Image (tube, rainbow, N blue to C red; front, top):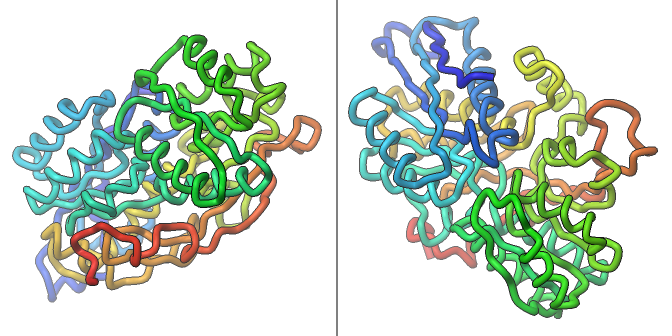
Length: 398
């Protein structure tokens, strides 16, 4: 599927035409359209943003919304150049997705400098609401703190008290290894070490052999997308999974689909969204499938929808597009939608919502297409994300 760049004009957001002149909003979906994260973000994030815009078409009076997209190629310099061009020349008001923490940290700073909005719906590093927090950034969907405490904490409690990490060598992987190591050690476990691999690695043999040599109970995969898929496939081929448990610390339903239940079953994972969780998530999945036949949305696709929706509602209330002002309004207003239910945006920019601990089904347990998960536990929002008492964000009042 080719990259989408679609404009939706004449979308009204509850503003009286006599109160404000017409406002034109331009949203840029900066995503991975060609690399290891294309399946779990990519085109689906563009669709998620479009679905949020479509919810306002019935009013169609006071705010027009245009959605454009580009491929950051998982490179901070390319992503930064696109962001600056969008903000300076193309009048983009907000950037969403950015499923690469290295790129996301760069976009967050640029958005602050330009007084625009960054909605991090695809990035994972908890530093986005920690030491690198910004009054112009809201971090949606998940982060490395939630993933490490959900999946990592569950596996330690189940007896996986010795770990070795196979880590993507950039900001995301390093943050996920750091946060998960802290959970393992806090619960009395041990971390034997780690090995770091380049992003988008095809051959994991040497890295897996190093991990196997550590003789730990768990090998933590601090990577995502195609890297996680390749690591799991090769670990299975080498027979490593017969004696050592793999922890896929950031895992998506698209990854399960690529691997197949025969290989992926038994993996425990933490997600913010699952298409078959309830009637509302199923309704969203049906809408998504109308634009992406044969597919279901990942949690990043759901996050793009949810964040875009709340952002537009905040503009409607604020009556202007100033970046910091809109984010301030986003923090004031509660969030509610069909993918994440009730939520809120905290002072550090962290979007709070429930998270879920799932286990991948065995092939014989699946009842049909994309029926991949069984729910192990619901993690309440207040437990899922880093408490403000532990925050290093300068915006947090001490």
